Amino acid sequence: MHEDAGSPRLLEGEPDRKLRWPFFVVLAVMIAVSAFVLWKTTRGTCSDCQPVVPAQADLRDAMAAAKTYYTRHESYRGFDPHAARKIEPALAWNESAKAVSNEVSIRGVTGRTVLLVTADGQGNPWCIADDADSVTTYGRVDAQTDADCANASW
Image (cartoon, rainbow, N blue to C red):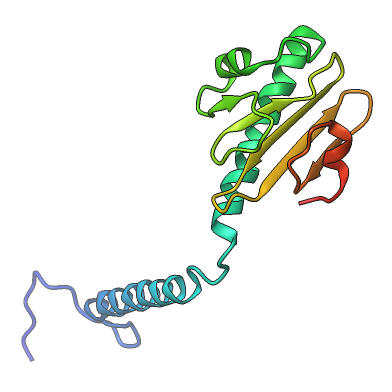
């Protein structure tokens, strides 16, 4: 047999490198298809989970804004929608006595306490309250005071 001087010679026991790339292409396609099937079959399995997650995330972001305010002023006094928007402009803020979907209601503001309330996409209320001398509490009620918000955790 005559070999070209320019082509590399395949040594005995060495795999053909030309056959490796199809294996990786097939492997990548199989992983992509598996991921797609998993995504399609698990998506939407929890009918009430989707609206809840944004409500909780909004309240966590809102509490971070409130605690930032507290750190700067050494008090929650004065934390209102105007002050909150300066710290966290991505949220819609209000002082409503009723929980509103996609908005955070600021209630129960004293020097040491703050209560934040929102509603999820189905209208279910969620709250988070902070007492600077104590703990942060969570609840699933349209709380009017920070003590009302301590009835259940998320």
